[in-house]
Length: 128
Image 1 (spheres, rainbow, N blue to C red):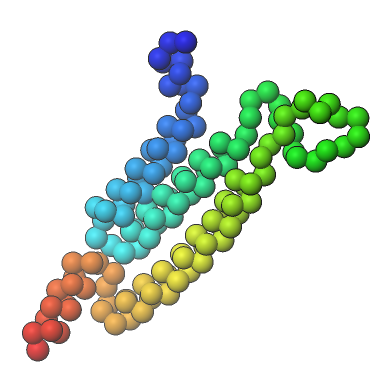
Image 2: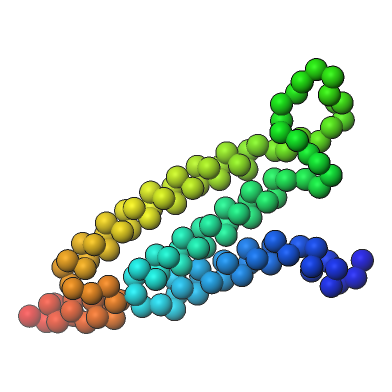
């Protein structure tokens, strides 16, 4: 197997890596808290997609329900990653909701969501 075929064959992992890096960049490099929050959600979504994709198998695996007449050697999908990622989605949505509430409070108090401006206001308040 040639290297290019290997890279193309794993394209979904490359998509997850790109999404993770976009989210990580947004969390580190951006000064606006809303952009940081969106970056965090992109990062979390990439991780969830990765875990869901590793649960599947090539060659036609089916859901893990055993019925009479099915071949015992048939491959079944592992339901555990899907269940765990469903929980992770709930946590992600909850985290997003709490973060939005905190951002609303920050905006009401400081009138901006820019990290640098908020830090400058806090420094001025401490000097008084």
